[in-house]
Length: 67
Image (cartoon, rainbow, N blue to C red; front, side, top):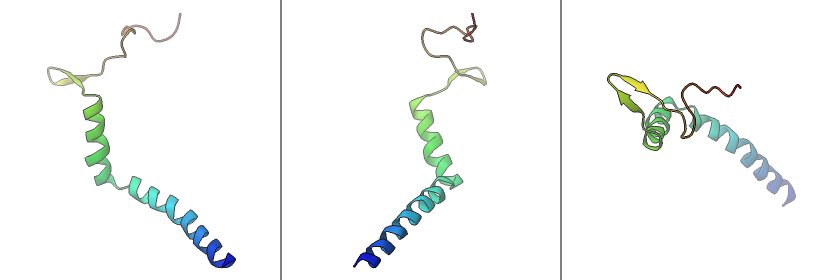
């Protein structure tokens, strides 16, 4: 029982990271899901044909964190 359990655990330990890397590196899935979700959460503000990303509230456009 001990050897079979260790083989099973080692299979899980190796399969899970490999599967996650494989899923994360699917370009089509990334474009369809992740980028669409990002646009839902943070929609870009449009001015004409250019996309403007505004800073968080309370920070001006000229502040760069230096005094």
